[in-house]
Image 1 (cartoon, one colour):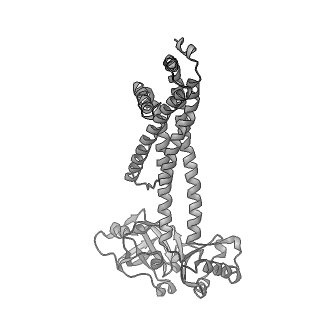
Image 2 (tube, one colour):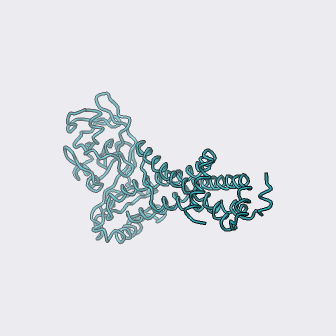
Image 3 (cartoon, helix red, strand yellow):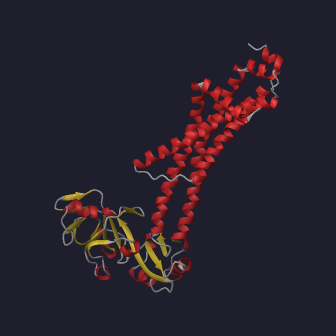
Length: 388
């Protein structure tokens, strides 16, 4: 049979049963769209976090100590900077505290106590005023640097530098305002209030340092610096290896890649169930079509159609249904992804996933179309002609 004629015949038969064909395609559309949307949103969220992690730079080493009793003293923290592969180190601690000024209380501001290198190491920019200095840290000075949203919330368009802000009832002088940058590494910079790390004790925080960002002398030496830091924590500070975690940005990115791949497989598997249901729908519709067209099959065989011709004809119909479902599903998937973007989500569909989803939809049509096609091809002409 001529391939073009086979395709036209398949299209005509599908067109003659528009509603049934549309409902069959719907199952495949839902499956393909679900794969693209779920995996795309998952990839987008993972990429967003990876970008924030990567923004710190490949020369940054993160140190976390799980036991607060084993936290580093200020002297031990400064000792890290004396290591040959360490350029600088800055401790930080997220605090639970309320901010107020002039009777107005901020419900969203986050308080972070950190060292003098924190702003530059995190890549933030001071829009006005100055940064926290080593003198502020050494003298336990009650000063702070605030985000642009905090400044606007309390003082509007006025310059916030020089004003006083109360943190859990204590007065702190605003010495700087950060440039608006949004969220970074889980912190909303615009709603941040940054204090000298030594003043954390005024807010009831533990005196020991449990979290640090350490900058290696170069990107190439980050892994060696991490090993040197681990040796320092165990040998000098006496902290057991079960109580600290030292990781480089590359290690964190590799771990996130593994998590993202696992998540993508999970989401793809869940959405793939819809494809399986859609494939069953294709098979059911094709079986019904074989039953309805039994006499037609008998007539074609009596006129010389071969078993192969009938088999190809029904397989082509299943393939046309699955391809149509795949194309429409891809369009719906990208449309749904754009709607998710408008709603504030990140959407990054991988080209490989789109190709795989379409290939699976085509495979579904072929696999689930084989049984109906074989049944149609196996009909005996005499029995088919007598079928009512």
